[in-house]
Structures are given as structure tokens and as C-alpha cells.
Length: 126
Image (cartoon, rainbow, N blue to C red; front, side):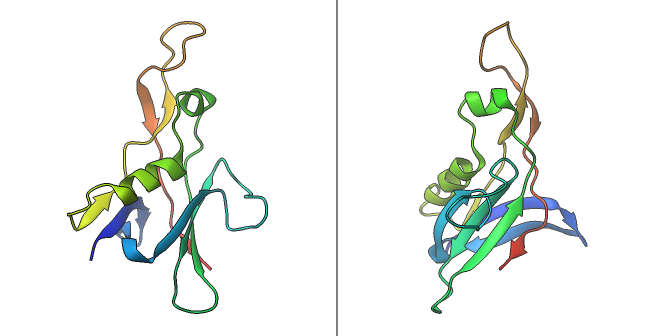
């Protein structure tokens, strides 16, 4: 079995949240509310196959991405999906290094180096 490992801000000493990859059905930017994903800029939801008629949802709150980081193509849900599909023969794929803010290299230029990185807080399971 392989796992998706998401680092979280320490909660009672816990610094990561681990989810079995085979239970993940969907990863979406925003919270679990349908049809519109609320809090798109600060939450990401992972929908799990619980084996029951209803599915479980884990919602993580995370650092807000700057406009420059978004323009450079950074997206938390995409980073989680990349981690989910990577490391096919390994046991654990760790999420990390998602730029939250970027330095400005020149006026009108998108990009630059990461100044801060996305941090996840404790998840909410519903």
C-alpha cells in the first residue's frame, strides 16, 4: 500500500497527516461545499472512498497563495495530485515545496524565487 503524506503545522506534536492513496477519489481546491468550492484561496479538499454510501472529506486549510504564485502556475490541489500520481513504486509520496509567495525579478515579469511556502494546518474530517 502507498500513502500521501501531507506535512501540517504541529498539532499536539503531530507534524504530518498520512492518507492511503487507494482511498483518494478526488482532490479539489476549495472546501467540500457543492456546487461552488468556497474558500478556494485557503482550503483544499480530499474526497475519500469510505466504502459506505457517503464519502468522507478531509479539508485542509493552507497558506494563501500570492497572485504572483498563482500566475506562475502554482496551485495546491495540483501539487497534491502530482504527489498522488508520483512515486508509483514507493511507499509514501510527501507533499512539499509549494511556493506561496514569489520574489519580483523585474516590473511586469512573472516568476522569481519562492519567498515563502504553503503550510497546512490540522485537517477537518467530515
